[in-house]
Length: 460
Image (cartoon, rainbow, N blue to C red; front, side, top):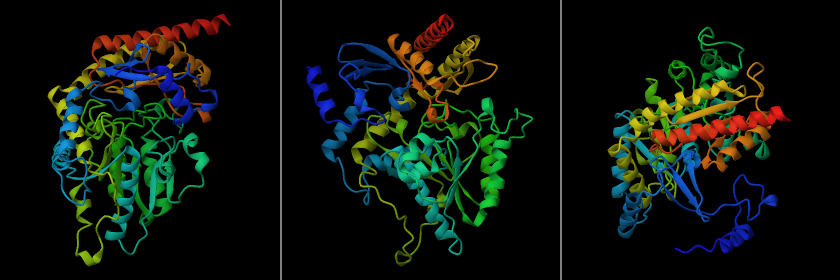
């Protein structure tokens, strides 16, 4: 299809409201028209090619240009695009079975929605209703999450999240959301060092639950690896302590794997690295690799069973999604997972991710690289003013590093937290089809960008 770039930009600037974008300074020069993609590469209307080291928004796990996914969706939509999920449809049923299989049968029930935000929102609602159904004499409505976390853009998920820059303009938010300090070993909020710390970041949870009153707490919601603030990989025992504490107080464990899931960390689900099983699992993004909007809440059978009873008891889940279980989206997601399995992209993420992480650790030779951390193809490179002070690199410096990478044809991301003086971690989450050659391109671009920035800083 022939593209009239000027007309597209005119229409865009006149009518489109972009997310997280200051439109006052937006011009034809600052917008790119993205027209195509293949593998790890995207192409703009001028023919420029970029290695997308962020998989769009952490989601294009199988890479761009997968015709078979588009064709699977097309074929399904010729037969049935949509019917409310009050009845069964073929691809949604097959997809639910596939997801249960990927969880090892531990999470057998799947509630479909449209996005990661909606998955987390639905999980919060399910957890609250679960408390009503199983403990009618208690009011279990509170959720404990972590500061600097991100769980979505709805009002409830913003309240559960801990990113001030995303939530402060919408406050006051709903009550019942309590936060604990994150497992940020490089900047330990307790001023301790692992392993002498005794996992204080995890063990604080018990005290918080007791302080709030266990009879008021519906659930704990965390990402196994806290992504948005800069890919915080916890100590290996961390999630186990969180799960054990939830069991002790009979509180639901909700894991948000919207980013972590579907091979991103080198296993189908990140929790599988840590030997725990959540009560509820929120997924999206890599579920369809961005080929169609779809998300889901996966649940243990015991959780589902609490919603069973005579019709007159009205115990069914009080939650509905117009597009949840959309047949066309489910067909795309099912084929996406089949591609991942057939091509062993989960194994590739583990292997190439380990290689990329090791190569990126070479950047620690620079005086402004404080830490490199990650698991699989989910990696953060934290920039600092200097190693001794650990003062986060200034926003302008981080921006220039990202711009230099873009000029070299590599698109990297940036962590949140700029309004509290952070936002200083380069985030890397390329498609799981990345090979070692692509990994070297990422390392080379980032190395050259950091070196150029350091030289310029010394020169000034």
